[in-house]
Image (cartoon, rainbow, N blue to C red; front, side, top):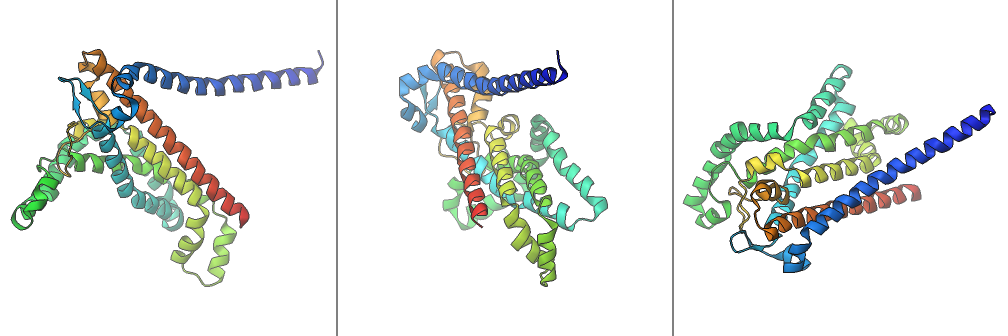
Length: 314
């Protein structure tokens, strides 16, 4: 057989292997969604999809299950953690590329990326033994005491200052998602053409002006991709949040008091679910969480496509 025929046959085999692997990933995702939907169908049939989504009661005794409390907890913790982590992660990326000396860049990037390698249970243990007492003594007790003396109407909003609750879980979650946002932002900033920066310097711009007017606008696609990756990580985080959030699925939530997310509710109750409806409701929570992740990624792709179209028009 001629050599060129061997090469052509090898290319075709490789193309088919790559195609099968790609479809295998898609098929695995579809199978996960199907199993969650099949397992949660009893809950959706009993309460209705919209009724399950907006139900405010989660009670295993009366077999009334509504996803709104853990759904609200998921949205609150993820949004708050992302708001806290965005500027530190962007600052770490900008400093490591634009300001840090050469001998410090690699160790700094390595230390930031190392945060992503730590298991979530380690974050949870650190949060219980270090962060929670610190939050309780430094933030919650002084603020609760001031509110009790000066603004009693704030006391029900703040909740009990135990150190285990919504605030501590948000803080540890913000720390966990910093490396995800910072890593992609750092790579995008490093790809900014040197000619554009040198042109700004030639016009008399300061380093801050170069960063603000050239670096950040050019790298905003990568920065936004890092934000989306961090948000997806926050939405699905389980163990650290379960250990720190207090796992209360009863509304209303307070700043210092216990709460729950969809992932923490599943992890906390899955082994204790004895009834078929309870187990189905937990699987339905997983399906809703999968839908939220899917909608988040679709929205992110639309925003990125819009940003690319604007760059092309320029």
